[in-house]
Length: 91
Image (cartoon, rainbow, N blue to C red):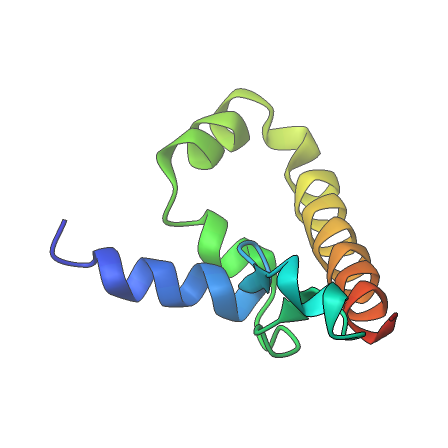
């Protein structure tokens, strides 16, 4: 528990957890109600997942698929970030 804030920061820095806001009132002002606060991920998602028991146990259960899992998570995080960037740019 003492590492909670560091783990949360790592989740954001890897793109596992994106920070955004949605304010429907902005639409009335002609602005986009979706605001993305996260910056582009700077670390691979696997850096965050290594500290998560649910994922490390998955890797122990399927050691032959570890690289596929990591690549899949990284790809998903990048695609999701790009999708959110586009949502934030739209009006």
